[in-house]
Image (cartoon, rainbow, N blue to C red):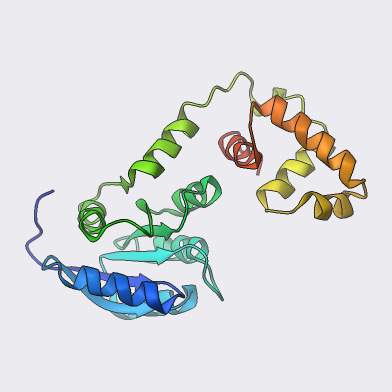
Length: 216
């Protein structure tokens, strides 16, 4: 990765002070990076970006007041020169795809070492995308997923489509049963049928299928 002539100006957003301070200390040792501000939630992040106009933003996904996904979508519309990297504890397909859709140029787990984090910052600053190995593997699985039928040809009933949407919104089977006024056992059977139709092994598989087939 070629070194930049001037320090890359970044803002870090995370609602956990320990992580926020830890990553700040780690990146402060990098001569090519300058931390211009920190934020504890999405609303603060947008205000700090408006004030400092950074080159790159590192943002947690789950934050109070406004999450990282909403903040990313807002920032990418208002400040197109500012690149965004999502940070999360897990390689969750829902969050990864949502961040990509919002306009993020990169996605890393929070346990990424400082050297790779610095490489990611430089990569997105230069106009490239950067994903950790685990995220790259997940994206490959999504991209290579076999799609035997188009959305309008899929044999889903209206009830099954509703269940898929609720699953993507992280509702439990009990909550879905209350919303659809069906028994939890019926919901479980229908969910098992959805898994077979989508060739999914679990809930995450259903979410990936819904994302790739635009069922959300």
